[in-house]
Image (cartoon, rainbow, N blue to C red; front, side, top):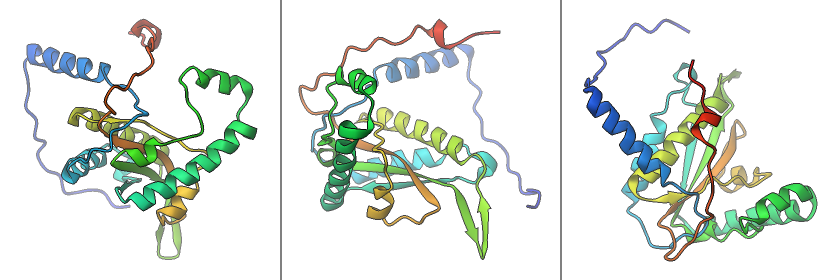
Length: 221
């Protein structure tokens, strides 16, 4: 690959230390209220909002600027139903044969079952794929850091959803190859996560989770 010779000025607005502190604290407070949601209202949302959310995710940094991520926005009810049916088929097998008793005990406190009604209730599903390699003519060119890059993009996605005033759930049906079939994705794209997006169902309750202390997750040198 050739050297990039086209550089432009970086647009940056320097802020005071006070503004830096206020901005960081405001975003911390906002994201601290984020919760994964399994009960969604079917109330519609302007499509432009969802488009802006996904556009935000596509601005994420990626290894070599390869941008090895792809987002399928699903609003069609028939396709959402197909995804739910296929997900529940795999999840039922997981609970009956694949999951260990230890794992089932861990998730039972969250009242999680193989049934996934949120896949139809939420007005939108955003299905994220990672591009493992590109085809350039007859050659296969591997994307470096495609897993890490897609992970960063999904972090942007969750933050953008919450910032817009909506809720989501990072859902990973396993195995999930059926998503590639339903959404007609080529074999070099692998499904990673499904994000139902919408308003929370009125009266929804969430587990009273306790997070680790900051000191348990960070060390300053």
